Image (cartoon, rainbow, N blue to C red; front, side, top):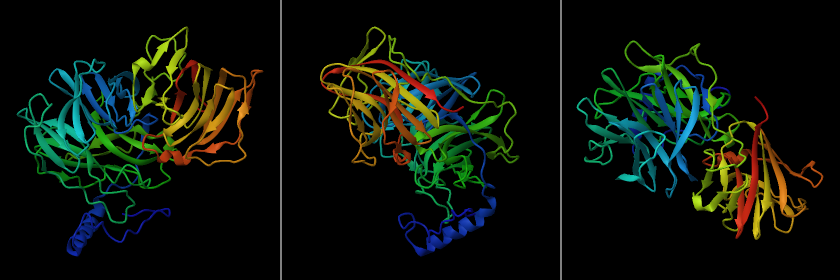
Length: 510
């Protein structure tokens, strides 16, 4: 099965890194050709759960309660745990990991005995944190494994033996607590052979999720690569009667895949199956909103049904009971304390000694010597078109402002200097020689950034209280190349502090 609509890609064969001989290449192409009649018929409909950069979703059920979490990348505090009772209304509970060096890639949330466990990867190691309740408190991280295999998934067999799966189809046994490896790692599952004409990023067998149903253990893994072409990612299904195999790939793989660039969601993949409160099964996965990569990888969902011979497949007809998902994360903030709102994360480092609350305002200490290295304070947008504003008052020796932040090397916004100069901060963006700084009243200012489908306008409030646009505007679509999407951010650099009296977020469309 190839692509239509001008997206068919002739690759000329598979990577030499995967196949070392012409004979193996011919055999694999023959296998792909014979399998095409069994491949899923085509695009399926996904709907959003959490729009924004909520990637690598992992979900578990405890009685009537559902808990969901995601990878956090370089943002702290990390690993935000969400709660729902109907899979549609999601409320953020707590961050499980305040401080951890390195990028955080969450692999699985599960319950073992009376404890909830979250397995995650950072710094080429697999860690686990535990808690009696998902709202915390969560334990200090414990190293489970030192390995380059980042994605892990947990399952127990009928005898209570626990196993930890990882990328590349590998597995090792855990102790009874689920916190320490006690066996050697072995490969028990091979990738599903992706047809050679498909436009992908890499084979990249990763993100194993194991779900028990009846006599079968079902594995749901990702292949194709998260980034690259819109059609790269996919969810692959396999099953076995024991975690150690033998594993058999589903005859209708891929379970879920973006087939065409004109679909609503790109790079759909990284799925986790869960049974809903009414017995309906679902696949929770991630994907990029088409033409809006700056939103990062959103958490999305598709309905699942089971064939007569026990394989999962996407249900074409959406259940009538499904409404619209609701994200109960607060977005605006008046900073009335006593704690920082759950919507906020800092890039790179979380230091609770850096901020305090005073008379209805947030007092934020400066960091670094530029907006990019200031460890900005970020919130993840959830709309394709939105507006953000901030009211700030400078302390001594501080420059502060408002921006849309992708990385320290790629962001766009406005900063206000102690001598009353308003200037653009646009590293990584097109530079305009005619763009001049603006002299404004010192100390206090209100700033606004409008993002309308990745077209951005910058504004400030003048001394008469009127909003003034500050040309040029910017097209930020290439900022979607950043691993973690684009966040709204407050920042302060220098040696002093800034007083932030309010942050306002407003969606521009329903």
